[in-house]
Amino acid sequence: MGRPPCCNESGVKKGPWTPEEDEKLMDYISKHGRGTWRTLPKHAGLNRCGKSCRLRWENYLRPDIKRGKFTEEEEQLIINLHSVIGNKWAKIATHLPGRTDNEIKNYWNTNLRKKLLQMGIDPETHKPRTDFNHLLNLSQLLGLSNLGTSTSPWTNPLGLQADVTQIAKLQLLQNMLQLFNGTSLVNIGNPYLLGNQILNPLDTFLNGTNILPDKDSILRGLEYANPVGNNSGLFLSQTYSDSSVFKSRTEKENETNQEFLGYNQSISTFPENQAENLLPALVASGPRSSTFNQMDFNYNAARMSTQSPSTTFEAWEKFLIDDDESSGSYWKEILDLTYPLSW
DNA sequence: AACCAGAACAACCGCCCTATG
DNA sequence: ACATAGGGCGGTTGTTCTGGT
Image (cartoon, rainbow, N blue to C red; front, side, top):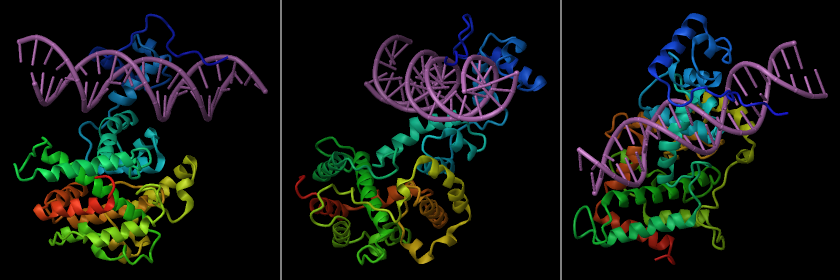
């Protein structure tokens, strides 16, 4: 025999809480404590089921609840935690004082999920989307936008707006760079991936040079990551340095606390010269690399504190958007060579 | 001003786990 | 061992808000 529903009594009120009901609930709890939720409504004079009272208290009335917009740091923390433990909202909430699991879950579903998708990142796996059509769409969008730059600074004959183009660039480059990032962790001997020129365009931007890596370097990198004959798609060859990506959720959860201790304390676990070569990951791409990514986030956040872009997102955006006419053809060239058959 | 669509958020539902008798 | 209560959790739904036309 299964457990009966908690609120099968007829006549119990449902729906939004009124200020009077809130008042009664808060008043009762402040005087008597929580006690058992099932009996609480009766004692508090509420025509609600106990479960409804509990949710109202836990998600809304509790005095230690923090309201208002999520900060950049909270966003980043949610993304990092989600990449490690998945949809464990209650666990994630324990790392964000004052935020409820419900609030975090809602925020994820309405904001962060979309943000990651827009950047070409799969919000479930936190890896670049391997959907080849998605990448083709981006590159085609970019190609179209390059046709019309002479008519107006903001639009082209096809009506593509500049910001759409920029988003496309952002997504495409992010996909490419994440590929390098994942690969570089294991392919230490790859001569094409170790040079600062190809591995860290953000560094050059932050140093004020704003020089893009040369096209040949990028293509050599792509070729290295995708040897001839591998037709499985540009981003399917991403590899990891150990088998931890295949661990079960439970194993991942057990590692979570250690991972996040690592986040805060440190950076010393990773050689500094290699840290210099890491790309600024926008999100953690897996349990093994999450420490790298948070470290990288801190590293770049610290470096960017004296620069105008205030966040990693903004820095990437600026890197991609502040280009001139010549970089337009630069992108076109890269795409032509990357997807020769798709144009 | 009215309408509509999409976003945001609060609340509910159903399942699960644990404690207890 | 089993039934049941209590509570936690994640997914989903329904309502409200907001911005655009």
